[in-house]
Amino acid sequence: MMEQTWIILGASSTMARALMQKLAEAGAGLVLAGRRMDDLQASASDALARGAALAEPVAFDARDPDSFQPVIDRALDQPGQINCAVFVGSMPPQAEIDADPGLLDGVIADSFTGPARFLQMLAPHLEARGSGTVVGVGSVAGDRGRIGNYVYGGAKGGFATYLSGLRNRLGRSGVHVLTVKPGPVDTAMTQGMEGLPFPTTAEAVAEDILAGVGRGRDVLYTRRIWWPIMLVIRAIPEHLFKKMSI
Image (cartoon, rainbow, N blue to C red):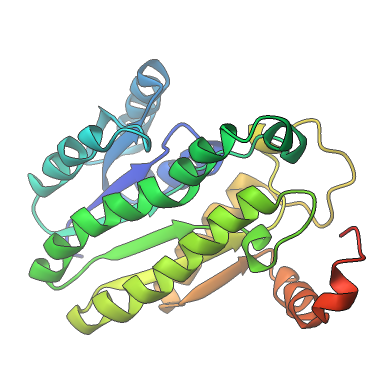
């Protein structure tokens, strides 16, 4: 098997940690990028104990473009295939953003423009190598603007559209781009939210991602039930949808 190094953006997140553990057990190299360096160092130690070929924490902040290139450089130091999984995002309550519109900028940077800019910088290197995988984690919230989280949904919707274009570009060079759209996942981001429909776990999402990568999927809903649900939600006429509290 070709040597593989995975850049994990937002490596402190629960979903990222679950994927990292599975990749480590498969012997992949890992560049763990995020803001919480103490946490990343602990994850790196865990990954090495699980069999990772490399596990190195690197500082990354989606709101600080100066932090992007060192992450890319560290990955490019490794031989073989370079892959990237993007778990970066933030979701303050919509009511807080409504009260303080200044919060919008951070949500957009964390969930869309920061990751997109990073991938724009990485893309030429993947094209040059003629291989690799990009996994972009979006959300079912990005499929339609809803009153409860339309800023977060707008950011994730924009990121999904960006990934679609990136897939069109990089696919011509043998690079696979997978867009992942989870429903509610049991993570710190969803703590305190009651009554979330069809929840799943970070471990299940990680398994679905690896299966989607192996099958060359373009778009993956996890859990699967969200594909027909969102198909119906997208089909509701706007004059009716705007009266609903979905």
